[in-house]
Amino acid sequence: MTGQLAFVESPVQLLNVLEWAHTAALQDPPRLQAVPPQPTRRAPVPATGDRDGGRTGGQDGDRGGTPVPAAPAAPAAPAAGPGRTGPGDLTVVVLSPTDPMSRGQLRRMAQLARDEGVTVRWQEARQGRGAVVRTLRELAGPLRSADRVIVGDPFSRYVQLLLTLFGPRRVTVVDDGTATMEFAAQLARGERLVRWHRRGSRGPRELVLAPVTSMARRKLAPGRHRTVEIFTSLPVEPPPGTTVLVNDFSWTRARFGPPRLTRGADLVGTSLVETGVVDPDEYLRAVTVLARTHGATRYFAHRRESAEKLHRIAVETGLEVVRPDLPLELIARRGPIGRTVVSFPSTVVHTLPLALAGTGVKVAVCEIAPEWLRENASPRAQGFLAGVAGTATRTERLEFG
Image (cartoon, rainbow, N blue to C red; front, top):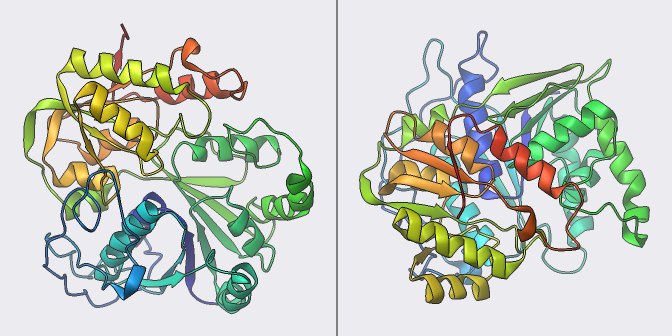
């Protein structure tokens, strides 16, 4: 078996695959084969907004055969050499989502990956009838021949279904946000894989998929014929038999920046309202207070935030709502970015301090108050979010009020 195959479904997952490839290439001995450096395309890409420049809208980056935009101007990646190797035989399969914002960001990330010499395969895994069967058939061969499989989201039903086709000898799980912490904990406890914000109901769909989830969990666990690695910037306790490789965002720092700093602050949005965890009115009140207290002028929206919610934020707070066209770590590193970045508990309170190391930017985290939670929120939500904030050692804790 040869080859390394990555499955990603979000822009952040693809970013962390690139970070893994960069980090793994520097290991001794290197894990990846050297390849000639790829030419970097220099046409600029807007730092924010969707393809047509809008802030809160967004069109599918693949619709109507529009060419993929070139990567943003940046220094070329270091050439392969002794102790430094390129991505070699790494192939990234993008299991494309349906929402336009995610597709647009993924298109831009895919071009960055190609500029780094990575083979990217765009798979319309959710378009039209028969998409699932077609995807499974087309990926069965590459999956069987892969020596290592890199997983962006171990909770993904699609990835779990793919893993039932074949069990790789080497598995790497890269960060997919704070879910990585929960994955490591559930793997260590031998529990079934369930996202932290789900209430754990066992409806008809869950019962049908239970065998798939159970088999996938076994193939994501270390064993006699399988090694498992977690590549993360988050504080995780390695489950027995696994190894943890630290993601310090060295590729991002080498590739972009340092950024120009603005005088004000920036707020980072979250999809906790959309996932049913936080009450929308309480969230809007918190954003209003934070913006006024810290002199924020911009609100960087999460790609899953609804247009209706963002419209309310823009109208009622006066903040400029920005829809980033790349993961926030890259947007912040390219700049301009505020001298203070304020976020609710999320992955960025762990990743931004690493991506912005040495720039002078302060990252602050505002915890979620218990009264902000919806009545039907998962009982585990408060504890999990408190843990995300509490373990962010490189951030400043904010008192709300």
